[in-house]
Length: 461
Image (cartoon, rainbow, N blue to C red; front, side, top):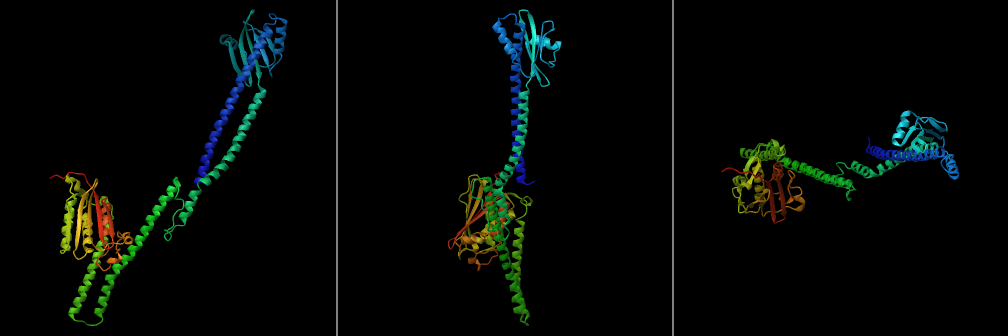
């Protein structure tokens, strides 16, 4: 069922329930008021009949004439019965069954006044004391006029309800259409967005209502999708370039070597060059494998408690083994009083790769001095390592793509590398609920900040 139909049905059901309750209340209280009002009128008729019949010889001529006049102002289908204390009928006027039984007479004598119905006829019985004894006077009538009005009221309420429901359904359908118009517009705009039109955005994102919030959320998702598609395109382009270059070089070297017989030294040179290109391809393959490993479910990676400062020192030693001429200064001056705050939880091998990549990048892009500076800080909930270099720097445009595998900025194309280090580091840190941030200025250097959450455990000595 469509939302528009569902809203219309719900709207109509609520209004129908309200109208039904309203109609029942109006009909019930109107009927109750009519019944009570007519009982009072019959009661007065019973008193008039009693005075006319039982006090005729006890009052003066004027009062008797007045009682007679009041008695003959009869109600429709009126019937009057008067019984003495022995239960004998003393007076009867009008036709109709009043349902008089000895039990009814006894109940009237006991209670003084009794009201009851016989079908549409209403009966009132009263006990009337006179100088000649106690009597029971019963008067009854049929409120035909009011009953007809009550029946007309019922018809009016039913017809009014049905007519109102027709109006409500039409109004509800129009209301649902108007209420869902923004959603219909969103659906129409979403249908226009494809992989080639990710720059399009929803237009209803400037308001404060829920639909505007939905549009804002959807636009944010489109921003991420557009960035992901752009990163994917960049990855494919850069990966193709990085993989094609050594393969092209290898093929070219081998084709030249096979064009004519050559000296053993020349073959050795070609084989050495081919070996270097093959090693380069191996490094690229290993980098892709490490990125894939860093993207698996973190729960499947074995983790343990590690001292972050010791991890950084191990990474420094590994980096210096690969770059013997480099210089790496680690600042341990901001150590906390509680050394347990340096403890993190993670996979030692993966975290070591992440820190080594950051240090090697700092050395690779630094000037001839090959100096990198690392500073360890302990914040409220995280342990942070800041690594600075005085290298070429990265432009603000290229900073958006530094975590895309195989991406390399234009100003470092002449420096050996594959563009795998930072993307791999980011994946590893995300796996450990950490983060990495890169800030840079052209010709002033780059600062890389990595952070990991503290484990808050006590390592026994």
